[in-house]
Amino acid sequence: MITFKPKQVTKKLLSVLPPRARDVLEKRYGLGASSETATLESIGQTYGITRERVRQIENYGIHSIQKSDAYKEFKTVFDELQTALDSLGGVINEQELLVELSKDSSLRNHIYFLLVIGDPFKRVKEDNSFAHRWYIEKKIADSVEKALSNIFNSLHEDDLVAEDEIIARLKEELGEIEERYRDEKILRRWLSISKQIDKNPLGEWGHATSPNVRAKGIRDYAYLAVKRHGSPMHFKEVADAIKQLFNKSAHVATTHNELIKDKRFVLVGRGLYALSEWGYSAGVVKDVLRDILTTHGPLTREEIIDKVRKERYVKDNTIIVNLQDAGMFKKLPDGNYILVE
Image 1 (cartoon, rainbow, N blue to C red):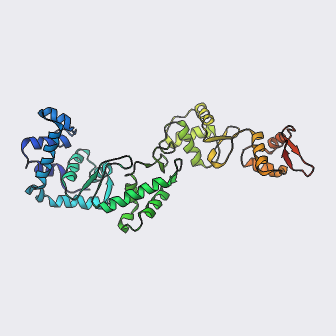
Image 2 (spheres, rainbow, N blue to C red):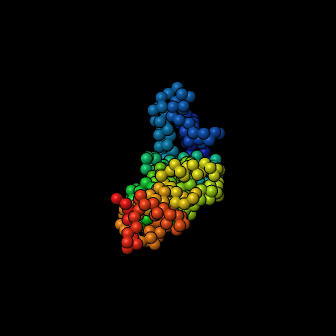
């Protein structure tokens, strides 16, 4: 994306410094022969000085470069970086910014250093809510962060939202932000700033810490598979879906055992599982019959069958046979069934 040569620019800028200050910056930012970055403490041990003294030398080096003629010479470089950052949204996740600016990983340390010394660029360290990020205008950065926080607060822990919907919510939360920042690529980049919301392997968004997003085991993958399917599935189908959707090995017996243990699933037929959140209740057919009559009062056989079929994938005859339990159910003269008191 950039047209200049970062290594040549940083070499020229570092040349204005005395040897020790140049060496400290090369080590701190991985600008020398090694691309590994060094800590203040490790550099201090090399020179036999404190980490605070190393920090002072680092700050001295940066300020010296910013005041140098070489810095002014490369104004077009910093202008190009500013234009690039603005075109990417004005505020962006640090890692994504570096990848966008160069596909060559060996150049990213040099680009990062140029961002550090460039006057227009501001960096904010990561916290519990957001990743490391860079911005040009604080007003835009604040608007984006507020919008992302509002979206997080609007989601319940188990919610999953399609990407189109999460982008629509972000647009709404941003209010009257400039139209050029409403591009979907930019909005997706802004979503990646948040550490509170994230998307699962199926591209659905929710709380980053939710098992529905950060799937870790067969249970979580099974939940996503059944939710995506949208209707009850046999445990063998669930195992197959896990392999197809997530490329995860899922033994049929293991999958069945995990479905039995997890309260997110309800057995609704022979080997068939639905999600509890769909309104299905746990228990055998008699339990379902009891719950229905408790809730709705006297019902005809046809009404009972209709309601049970919404709870269980069972044959009509199975429901009728269970209704014959005289110790639990009673048929009235008008044909309605009630619970035995």
